[in-house]
Length: 503
Ligand code: ADP
Ligand code: MG
Image (tube, rainbow, N blue to C red; front, side, top):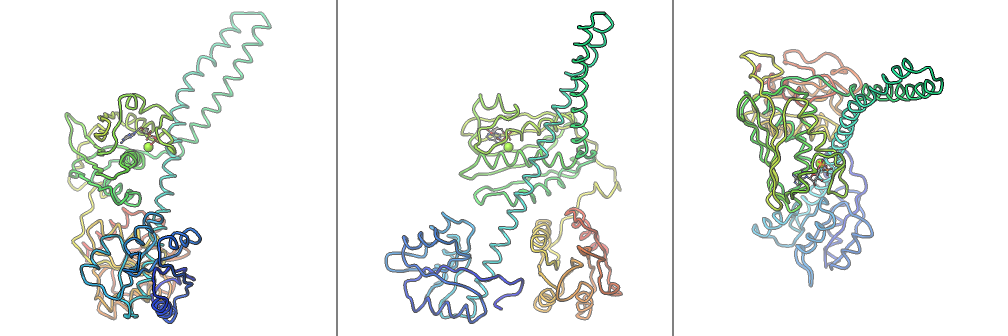
């Protein structure tokens, strides 16, 4: 196989190449290396568009120059139609300048023809990366959908409260009427009203308890920690042309709130900001001390901005200017912020971007030696962390989280690949390994590494279907931490930091 990891299945490869002989040579190279693939060759724009419309390939390989057509044109066409599909330049000659330009224009890789060794593995890697990215996007979308549902729940909660107040007189008045009148017709009407009011009240109560069920208690939230989580969540939805700037202040910025809710407020505001910058721009999240005992969290964009009419209706339920908007994001933001005793201040002008300020009561910072929960995670110092997990999405999220925390992760999908990594690039500072990895078990991998001189900490994720060490006890002499599932990123990062500190 040209690459390690799960099989790719049969690939459909589109070749942009004017020479049938060269194309055949490329196909042979890939088939001989064990790639399963079908090929289609085109050498002009019309044919390329037709081919893309007929069947979306897994990857496009393109020559640099052809009579009447160029690789750069092919790349632009592909990016316009399928921005995420991998594209590799394959050229007879390629100077360093051309190569750099190719990558800058958005190609995933470039290969010199007649260097057959690299092509199959480059193709396999590009396809795998694109699929991983696709999977990450799917997870991010899922998350957004969940948060939308949560907005709805919040709206229902608000409605229920209001309805309960409205229904209150309807529950009391019929009794008063019965006291004051002996007219059987009037008392019957009073009974009808009372019965309807009772049913309405019951519905409101059940709606409220349903919504309350999803609510969690408040806790002390340290702003840098919250920003870190929000940054991680946004990563998946951030278009390439939007730069994210996080200024989280220091760990003395503490607010008392429900973590999920406050996070949702920031995500909602940030998504609005991203949607307001279709041409790209800068999204800025900032936390700082405001006047008095208040904390300011600012979400700012340099997008399309809002006119006065829009600003006036901003917080009305279902007000949206977007085709697929819900008009519920800001409603739920305001409800959450007001439930914390805070307020939202908006400044915006058409064409000048928008700035949403959340002003929240500031809590006294935790005293020294306060609970671990509140303490900020120490940033990594570039320590090398070997991450082994056969679940590709989790692996990629773990890798991202660790590198944004300042570590240098290297990732492997199975025990054997992990061992190869260690043999090739030396021992890591810590190992994070899933209990259910294939080829070599977690225990075997750690024992093998110990044989190579590894004495650092091991963090083992509980297997999906059993104990962390399926085949016997953990290797003696290694410091092993077991983390239960479901995983929480904060707990993982905390475990890594603690393990490194103890080592
Ligand atoms: P939705 O995003 O579903 O439309 P929201 O309640 O989040 O619902 O936002 C309501 C409306 O407020 C948006 O449709 C948009 O017109 C406007 N809006 C919110 N945030 C911004 C922003 N950062 N820039 C420009 N307009 C915004
Ligand atoms: Mg919104």
